[in-house]
Amino acid sequence: MIRVFNTKEEYNIFTSNGNDLKSGDLYYVLEDGGTHFNTNNIDGQSHDYDQIKPSGTKEITSNGEYDVTDFASASVDVPIPPEYIIPTGNIAITENGTNINVHDYATASVAVPQPSGNITLTENGTDIDIAQYATANVNVSGGGVSDMIDLIEGDIATFDIPSGTTKIRGYLFQGDTNLTSVTIPNTVTEIGMSAFSGCLYLTNVSIPSSVTTIAQSAFYNCSSLTSVNIPNSVTTIGNNAFSYCINATNLTIGTGITSIGNNAFDYNNSLTTLTINTPNINFTCFQSKTTLTTLNFGNSVTEIGAVAFNGCSGLTTITIPSGVTSIGNMVFRNCSNLASVTVEATTPPTLGTNVFQGDSNLAHIYVPSASVSAYQSASGWSDYSSIIEAIPSA
Image 1 (cartoon, rainbow, N blue to C red):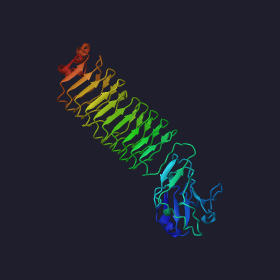
Image 2 (cartoon, rainbow, N blue to C red):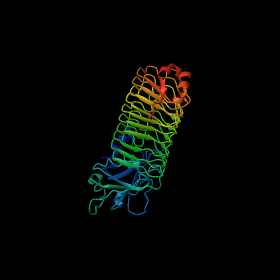
Image 3 (cartoon, rainbow, N blue to C red):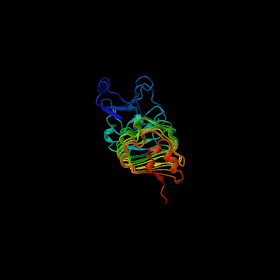
Image 4 (cartoon, rainbow, N blue to C red):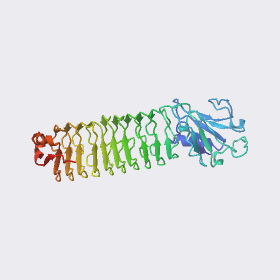
């Protein structure tokens, strides 16, 4: 960000009152016409540099002894630590310069275009005032892709994360209400904590099959997401990862999940279709999803853990695939509109207690015709022997 101060004293008062400049901020002092750079303790100390330099390779020394009065035209060189990068592109500078946050750039230069024609810098620098430039381009070029990416907050609607990136760092896009679509390359393995939290208008995100970890609150309160597809590569979903995605109607969970955090899908109040492919459904984050009307189990599912779908009153029919060998306690308890359950396994799965307790409308449990007697006499299933019958012929 470029901040403008009337005097250096005004800048000193700004910082002494507890205000802070981010690493790499520029500030412009009208009194001396200087554009300065503040490291904000990048190396454990705070330094101010005069960053105006001529075209060419002449270096600015750390004590800033090259003054703007020495040069007729110049660019602003921003020596940011190498972990901050942004893809090549152009970002507009508004009249007051607030769109340019140099904290977000790589070790490139921020070019400040002159108005048409040549402008001469006067002794006090008054002719080079950023406010003169109503519209300009910042040309950004970074050297190599690292694991950390940053961008101009609040200015980008669609964003393509550079190929080669392996981690989307925590809080990267947090609260960016302009972001509507993001493309994640198949080199990314981790989506960091709160990386997209509060991106209220993010409607389109595709998680590639390279991702193994979706951290805590990664997509928290992304209220415009309508569909989420978690690929088979993902093994870990953190606490609150998709909480308050209130307009998501479709959710697919891949085969690789070994851990789902607390409240990972809380307050997803529009969820109607859930497809689960992970073998062991030992999580409770879909309790009381009253909007859920369609529940699909993939053929890889072998175990449905306790109370996983307790209180899902919107369910009317369920099909449990042949690979399931265990159904936990109270899995479908209080699914008050559940009318029929089809179990495709020829050997009755182990059935927990109170699995269908409170399911007052349950009238049919369909099983393979050759297994009807086995189900009617099996532990747990025998409690429902009167409604166990053969799967109807097609």
